[in-house]
Length: 497
Image (tube, rainbow, N blue to C red):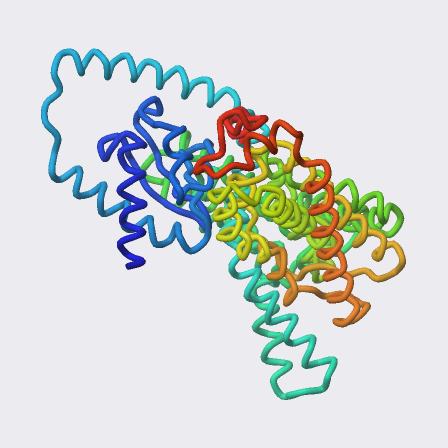
């Protein structure tokens, strides 16, 4: 029965995105079906959003249909099968009138694509997207090793299973000790170089022998510069490699290019980049510690309140290297528990919408299906299916995030500092990753308290200030889709993502 439902969802989506011949590639992430289109103008956005299974749409490099966690992994194979069958079956030849219409639609689609590209393909966003492409593949390992590190810390503090502690420490720390190599590999791959050369240059940073090198009047430390040094070293290697490819004869390329690339990039890394990146990494760690230790509640209020808008604009990707640098330096990132409060505000806002619109069965069904994922830190279904299309509840959700962030920031300022040993999860899923000098009990209690504050303030702000009278009149009726008159509509916001 579940398979039939997923197949029906895929069958409903396919004609609304222009049919099999309009699709060039298909992929999915945790919550979204990602489709590359030949002609954007053939997509019926309004009809797609009206489908019960569709929680929203997002336009970026691909056309992304938000289906929610679990659902997207089941719908995507059905969708791929339908597309493959549709291509194999072929389609009848177009008439002259149809051909003209297709040309007109293609022209309109090109104009839409150009306008979308101008909005979303700014240099800053393209650069941040590339940074994300470097670090996102590393997140599963960060999560796994982070949870094992937390388990090892629990065993160490309680004295249970002492024989397992060294083994778990090795498992948890092995990846982090070599993360610079993986960052270098992915950096070279992302910027068009040979990945293994990027990894080879970045490996210099973590090689114990660099402690014998004297640079700037002092001995280097293994790991000095961390992931930022690895990024810079691998990017330099890509530039040197491309320069060699242009000038080295083909007959000597296999020997000369790798040697020159590693030698020049390695020397610059040892006698320049490691020192500079180390200074920058230290400054980032010191600033983050100072910010929460002195700014406390105000810093948490700003960070928690602005995180959802940063996500909508794609600017949150700039935080990934900062999180990773903090984890390298201190074993955890103190910023992530504060930023996670934005998800708590979103959950509270969704619960308030559920209570304020008792007659809107469609929206309440969406909220019921998306709330479990929201509690676990996956906020996209609630954002795109509930708060963002309604407008005001998105703002009140940010208010809840700000309140939760202020609570966690205040506790940090009072001396209860803690953070997350990995990036990726938030919400309840972040509990196993919490770590800090105050101990497991206080860490869990403060984080849980922040979530509770975010839920309550997000709920109260949305319940009392999230709706105008006109919105309640139009939305609190027995209907299927959210009406187009709900202010402001999704389209202008989605276009910015």
